[in-house]
Length: 92
Image (cartoon, rainbow, N blue to C red; front, top):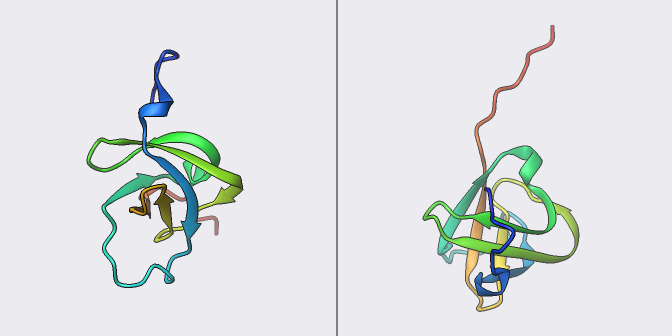
């Protein structure tokens, strides 16, 4: 996602913690973010949801997010992380 240097990040909802996949319970996430492997290792950056909204991830330490993990926003909503399909090489 490309952002302008003048982007006001204070207007983005802020994700401050992570719930690992399988521990989120039965509550449906409010949205999802589809990210390739290299974009799922983060600490502080803006990401875009499937609906086109932007979220500021502001975690206390760097973390590698897995498919199904959820980011918890300050207002309690959960954003599900989905691993984007990627090409892989099969080395015989």
